[in-house]
Length: 424
Image 1 (cartoon, one colour):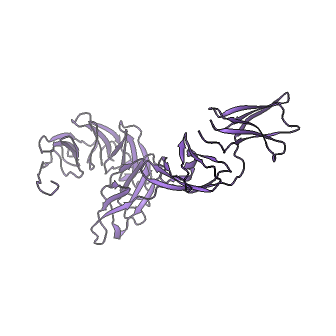
Image 2 (cartoon, rainbow, N blue to C red):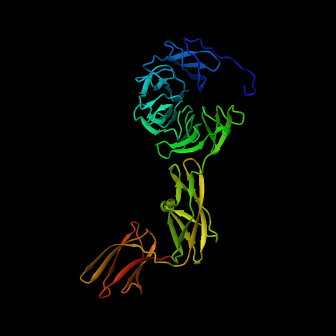
């Protein structure tokens, strides 16, 4: 019980049914599932099931060596299928990834590790149809690696090979938040006393988050948990008394929203394309970002999000500011400041798609933003401009204008956004 009472020995192993269990159990309904790294029919380890009241112990599978040996890690469950790893055995005796149904049928060795990848000591995690795990050794530098493999055994990928300076000997399991995996190495790092690291599920964005030293802990061996953007874990040794530590680590600011300045060009109506706004945003691990919201401006002007744009409308040509907030798939937020200067700069123009002269008549095709109003203007010297027409851009954004009497000997045309119009 949670108060320490009611301790019950549910089952004692005898060797033939398993021996020396190292990993934890998982629970499904009223059944517990686990593995032992030794014992069983061949003394190579077992997978077992037992009811929560201690009845119904079943040896679901005994390893033989060629199919894997010494399952040190715990199991994970998806539907009616259990997944895990063995530390040794398999084709090269460097361990395997396996699957087995909860009733003991359908055992499958999904992958046998080889010289370039070997000896998984920790368990797996599952996201969609992909399993993620680590190995103690193997990889490009034989210092361990992070890997991914599909649940059907295809698509094995080495996501990261450790080199020692970034960690080695991965005995702790992975945890997943959003698209980022977190775990620890028992050795390696700056002080060769272990690290905390992060890596994206596609293998990008590897980062060493912390290097352990004597005073704060040495050789982390167990897994992490994540709560409110803070990692919690333990080290086996080190600390003030040299007997290990419990620690927490605040995740770094992985998402940064930078401050930016834009010019309203003397216009009442100003639009900022949201996709352009994200050029100001940095996510250290490359997680997808999205706009969480915008505030009202310093001058009390409400901001409107519409059709992929942030829309600002103010008939007073004064400088202004507002804040925007972005978030990523980890649930982290960041806020940046947008400064709007009001002074006119260069005219905000549409794009001339084509210009043709036929029998002295100029035909132009312009591109603008759908449903907004533009002035078609002409000049003979690029200084003095005259408005020929005021028109709304159609849904396509492209429209045609014909000038039957273009100035001679030369004429210049532009499309000017009419910023004094009230937005729809």
